[in-house]
Amino acid sequence: MKINTDINILGGLTNWGLINKFIPKVNQFDQMQEPTGIYSGIRTQKSVQRFERAIRKTLLHFESPDLKNLYTTILAEEGISPDCMLMLFWNTSRNNELFWYLNQEVFFPFFYSGKLMIRKEDVKACILELKEKEPQLKGWSLETIDVVARKYLALLKHFSLVTPTYLKEILHPYYTDRVFILFIYWIKAVEKRSNLLESSWLEYALSERGVFLDRLMKKKYAPYYSFTYTGNSLSVNLLLDYSRIYHAIK
Image: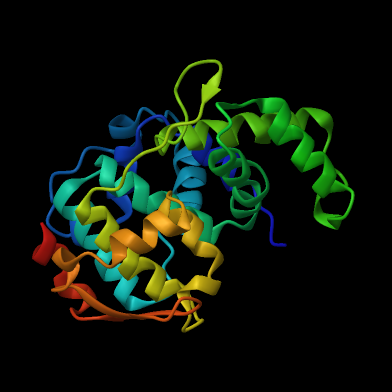
């Protein structure tokens, strides 16, 4: 695994509007920007640079021009909207292996099994188990693990997947039609398998597989994609370019 401290940094980001400062399509038309530190509430330039590195590496790194175009468009049009935050949750999971691992081992098992909340101790136990087999974590102290667990839950809070209360209750956001379509386009961009039923990214639909399939087959989505489903195989064909999909469903 490639493990870095981006979870700690982004978990402490209080003003997510800072992200827009690092998007070219936003910045090129913003000639009268405030100094980044003033805008974000971050006091030192060194701290700004730490946040910038984490934002660029984890939130705004895209493996294809299509995804970059899609994310840049929605951020420029909406800023940090609830829909955009869900999309950033997907992208963070794609770009940060530790965040992805904790989702797979803690968040999704809890989410899909109907558990009501996630405790910091649950996350710490997962990291301690990973430490036993991951060389990069051998030097992590209990204090470091405690901080990472806390910041991981803070990130889930920012993505509106757990409550902002001390006891982190699990939330079950329902994707709007627009977010559902964007998810289909996102998973098609990141999944290399032709059969989407084999994709581990299906969990990010935040719905049971049967519910997801029933929704995917609804006729109202026909202008945006076509599909072939045989019971154990699902292939999806996108009907619009990534440069057009956002405005088509806006």
